[in-house]
Image (cartoon, rainbow, N blue to C red; front, top):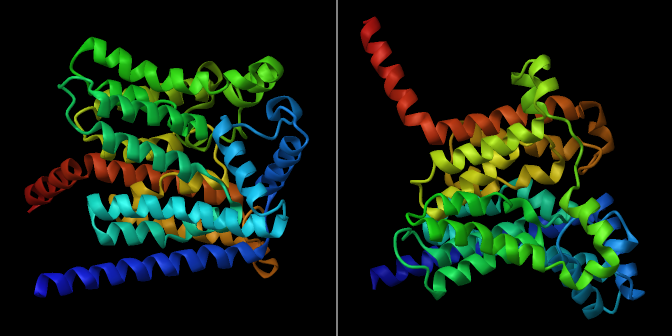
Length: 371
C-alpha cells in the first residue's frame, strides 16, 4: 500500500511538472516570434503552391521530415496562422515531454524536472519554435533501442535503432557525427562500418524524392550550409596565427572525432548527451537556438557550471533582440559577452563531468601536501 501511494505521489509530481512546463511554453509564445517562424511560413507557402522546398527558398536548411511535419499541422488547422502557432508550440512541447520521460526513467525525476523547467528550453520551444529537440528525442530513442551491448550481433532491434538515428538526421542533422561515436563502441570492424554508414545512408536517401528539382538547394543550403561563424571558443583559446592556418570547422570535427574515441566506454545514452555538449561548445557557430541543444546534458550531469549556464543563458534570451527582447532590458543585451560566457560555462560543465573526479582528487592531494 505504501509503495502504491509513493508511486502515485511520484506520478502527481510528474504531472505537475508537465503542466507547469507546457503552460510556460505557451505563455512565452505570447511575446511574438522571430526569423525562424517566418521561414516556416515561407516553406508552407511553397508547399501550398506545390513547389519543391529546396528549390524555392534558401531559408530551409534541414532534411525533409520537418517541412512535411509542419505541412501536416498547417493543413490540420485549416492553414490558420494563429492556430498553427499554438499547435506548433504544443507539438514541440510534446517532444520536450518525450525527452523528459526518458530522462525520468533513466536518470530520475530531479534531472527530468531540471530539463523540462529549464527556461532556455522553455523559451526556445515556446518563443523561438526551433526543433533541435525533435532530432535529439529521436536520437535518444534510437540509442535506447540499440542498447549498451556493443559486442553482440546487430539484431533487428539494433538495426531499428540505427534506422531511427538516420531519421533523426533527416529531421535535423545535429547528430551528424554521433554515428561515429556509436561506431567506436563496437568491437567488430564490420559492425563499426554498418553502425557508421547506415544512419548516414538513410539521411542521404531522404533527399532522393526532392533531388531532381532541388539538388542545388540541398547541396548549398543543407549539406554545406554554414551559420554565423563567430568562433567564440577559438577566438578565446587559439592564437590568431594558428586560426589562420587551420579552419575552425576542421578543429571542430577533429574534437568531435577525438571524443568519439575517448568516450567510447560510456553507455550509449550518456554518450549522446555528452555529444550534444561537445557539439555546441566546440562549434564554430553559436546562435540562440543552439543554447537548448545541451539542455538534457545540463540536467542529467548537473553541476555548478550547468546551473551558471542555465542562468546566463536565460538572461541572454530574455534581453537579446532575437529573444524575448523586453524593451526595458535592451541596454543589457550584449551577444558577444553572453555567447563567450556560455561557451566557457558549457566547456567547464563538460570538463567537470568527464574529468571532475580526477581534478578533485589531485586538488585533495595537493591540499594534503601543503599541510
